[in-house]
Length: 459
Image (tube, rainbow, N blue to C red; front, top):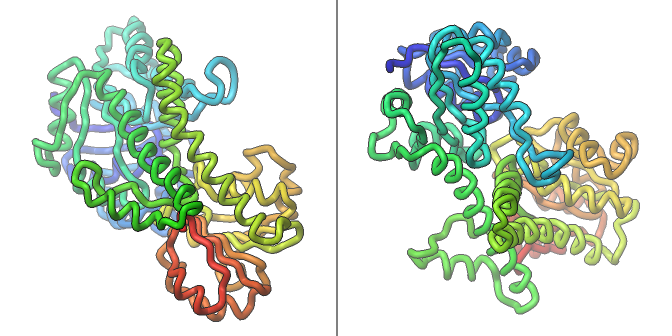
């Protein structure tokens, strides 16, 4: 099977960058990314590359190289499916907000809609690739829909989970640790192997059965999140005992069996995958009656939630047990630096807790829009949209954000925050000037010298 045309359904944080790199590295393959969201497709086609809907370092250059040559963005989903040899499904799989499994199970309605659209539009045999993060055995549902079309078209299902870290996605795509492909049809698996082998060394392309591939993605994210919650649990103990969590992390990270990665204590993990995937794992374990397994992984989420609430509580307690009417500046709203993605960002939940105490919050983030900040808060439903807009403002200059603030909370580890004139910031704040560093980003000793009241997690 030689792949000449690829269609990707979904032009979001996974589909956009992944397909752009495939197009860049495989100029002989025509790659079409489709989405029913006209505004999003228009942004991908905008001549001004700064307006791409996904911010990712290096992405604009990749799109500039391939777009119009063999990379296309379209809303004509059916035509792209019909023309393709291989169809990637890269749509959202949010946690269910209704019915059985509410708050834990993955909502697969978009996956099913994709499968039905593929079945209806296909006139020739296709390889279907699961790119979205899915619960194990989702391919069973895809097979059931696609193999019962009665059209005589053959479909081969593959699982090809993404292991991208937002902020370094292009780097990860250009030089991945591994590419994982799961499937039952050897020819179909080889066809996808050949695509990646255009630039990825063959020994880094792992092939497994379908179910191992699906489960590996959930497991990888669960293990990474577990490390974050583990060091965050120790950070609270450090604060009580006089230990320093950075020193503890360095000491254990030099053990080759443990390693240094994901041992940075913080206000908590966010992003679209970690919480969703662990909840999914918990739900799957429960559905098989594996209660101990479910409890074990659920504690990772519990610890993460605790860390966010603890950070907010510390702000209130330190500021004389009241933040009512006080201006608190948030530096950062994205869940991590070098992305405009805010899904499950710790900033949202810290803000929510402080707003419940009637704090006045001013947000500055170099890549997140005011519309997104308000959408994130409105989605929680804790208060009315009007209340959110009364209590929260979003500004485009960090010095304006800090003007007459009672406190600054660092919620995202943007590098630019380290370069600010903190002497100037302090001069224009209310006194005492508090800084709560949720990312352990700033130099505590320097801020102490300037006269700030500086608090960092794990110290």
